[in-house]
Length: 66
Length: 267
Image 1 (cartoon, rainbow over the protein chains, first blue to last red):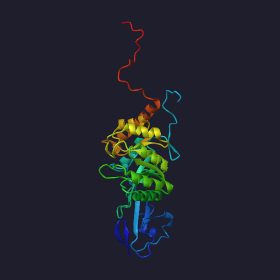
Image 2 (cartoon, chains in turn purple, yellow; image 1 turned 135 degrees about the vertical axis):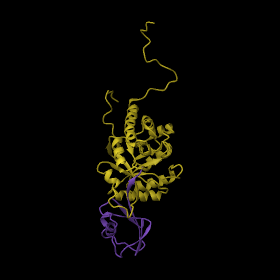
Image 3 (cartoon, rainbow over the protein chains, first blue to last red; image 1 turned 180 degrees about the horizontal axis):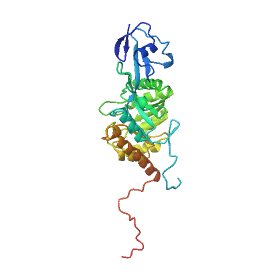
């Protein structure tokens, strides 16, 4: 199935959890925050949140800024 | 105030109930690399450091160092900003992501911009976002114009610090309207920090001499030929300006008044 990940289409396995997505992206253990369809996904729920087709997923981090 | 020959002691600034020794807040944008960022921030003595929230680069080198590995939240108070947000909705969304990213820390720098040419705040959207964020439990430090009425309104909404611009973001023009900044300071019951527009050390000193509680800057340091040296200069300027403010300057007069006594002259 396809999701929108940081503005781009991405094909992922059905039933993938937020936690599995983070691991597959090589972002495990990184300081990040996630929202799905404009709703914050608390880190404590990554293992139980299952992605659905066409979910709009944003994964953000802190970068330099003023 | 008691007279003393030594520099002022225990002159800390309180932001959201926490005490800070440094009245200089710095951004982390526009540096050459993370090493320069780290060195400049160390030289500035800043304890509160702003960051931006952006998409993670998917597919890039996962070993790429992260800003927060260099500017550790254990060592610094991280102040996430809402830079590049042009609507209240985007700003609120950014703050919520930042709070999740920083494990529940709710101190944020709110800025809602009006247009790209001036980067002036969109005041109506700023007021709207400030209200939503305060109601949602955020501790809001808000970037605003140098309008005393709006500054007061933002304080009344519940922002914990109000941060009028000295001049447009990144312009380096210095404090363009010192009288408005002064009025904002005189009327305020929350810390007032000049945010944006400082160009060099004297600009920072002027802001502090007016009685600002602190100054937030980024480009003036990061954009200097030697950012680390400029960071050190800014640290001194903030301290000098603060001490001059506390010391109380002499009034301006149009004509001279001799420093040496006239009595006892033998000529």
